[in-house]
Length: 491
Image 1 (cartoon, helix red, strand yellow):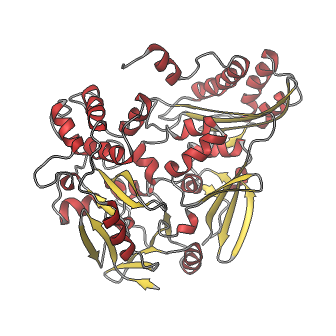
Image 2 (cartoon, rainbow, N blue to C red; image 1 turned 90 degrees about the horizontal axis):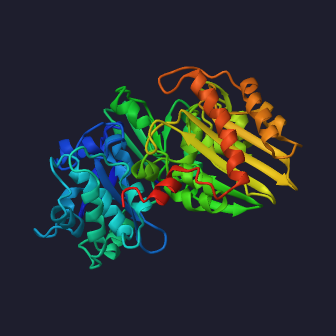
Image 3 (cartoon, rainbow, N blue to C red; image 1 turned 180 degrees about the horizontal axis):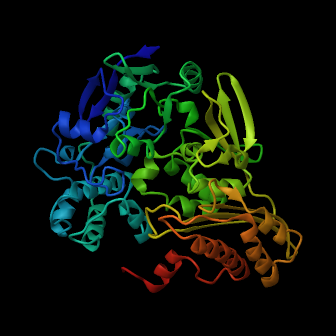
């Protein structure tokens, strides 16, 4: 089946759009076509949160999953089959929604520019269950919304006040589910503008594979958290643009044969719980990737396929011995993830080939995994240095070590000399000192706007020292959030 139009719900109203500009953003559509100007344009790169809207989709368990996303970098075509909710939808016949009322009563707004974005983030949290959220969960939920007037204390008080309201709102999940089910025709979507520009949303991995064989030059997006900036900052117009969000068979997470398999369409938010259950540090690192809005859209498969030398997940995946399944047509091949990254901007991916699955071996006996990220800001910042450490220790001896860094070279890369300095030796200060010295054999980092070469090398070595401290005395507070808890900062 094929369809040549886009179908979604805008609030409670159905929309059917044809001849859509493939690179039009949700924000531009809302403001320019629908005149919903409550949604603001601030940074146009997914950082400030002023453009936040909420996307609702079936959760597979008979309910709706409400997620805040950045409208400024989302291609309009990614709304297909969803309900998009803006700040204009929240009031019910003149009566403010509980999160809006709480913002008013706690004085959570001054200039008002950022307020709609905060309200939408709070609305998403409210729909998912605000009651019982601790300070860390609230911080994470609001980290993608910037305010320079009021400060966050009254906004957090608004969240606490809204949490006490448990009455149903005007968003009837059962009615919305029925309407979204009626839109779900399982069709491959192709939108064309002027007969020359195209947006494709294949409904399965098979359809995606066939499409990319015919059009290997296509730009593939999942969450568009990187490509979205091509559109808004570089004014690029890639053609065709292919969105894999309709291919539900790419949005699965499963555990088989002692491994966790993550489909290319699985978002950070969807993978977080499973990753954190096996590797708590992986979960902690994912919580610092972008913001909640970015994690609700971006995918681990996209982070790998992008090939950035400062991507957060590849060093962790390399350290854990993950493998990629790449697909071209009906042909699949598997390779260790470290072999995928060849050089800066170059990956082992043939024309028409795409990342289908990331598979991570589950931890074996004695394995310890640690991940550290150093950036200028704790939240919502790119890495200066990112590292993953997977060690197996038996009777005090390091029997296996896999160490990978991002930000230290043109690709995420293993530190093989440092691994060799650890393997087969007792986990001691002397062994760690040898591994720290060996890091200089593994990397000759560059100086750029994020950090100097000296800083990067020093940080990479100090991460090994931190690893030794944490393994030797887990009770020492080495994490920023641990210290915030201890000192009750912001209480």
